[in-house]
Image (cartoon, rainbow, N blue to C red):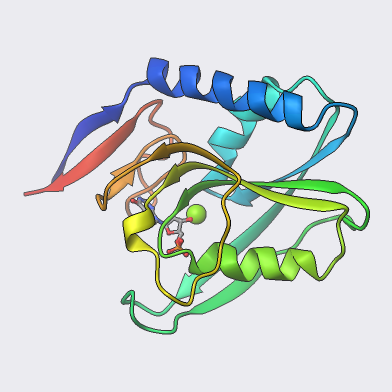
Length: 175
Ligand code: IMP
Ligand code: MG
């Protein structure tokens, strides 16, 4: 069994999301944001964030899966669910739970860029920059918390599909 140690409490997460939303409200004044939530992990954060956004918001979802085990493997990313609508000329904000090696988001942002949105930005609740692989080329516009190389769960993040529903973020400590 694994133990969990609280890294960010629900209160800390809420306070940080308040700040992020304030920044986004300023940056997107006068615009409509198309938020793209990345299934499944990004959804909890996306809901919390979007409820605090004051400019008009539309939402859509994508789901990607990465295969290939170790961090130095090339890995293979599959688009499992695509957007329902076109994003051409829209101001797109991708909302994700965590950026780790950066492979998933490198693939995703490149794919979305080919669809010619008016603007394309990336917002993540957590960032683990120490884990980034050299071939990943991902610019993160909004980061909730920068964390060390630890495995975390909660607030959308899972361990073997469990713990996504925790209202806080915990570090998994394996016995
Ligand atoms: P990347 O392509 O390596 O950046 O992988 C991103 C995906 O790996 C995330 O969307 C998560 O699903 C998963 N992931 C990376 N680190 C963690 C973690 O600490 N806890 C849970 N899932 C993680
Ligand atoms: Mg994910």
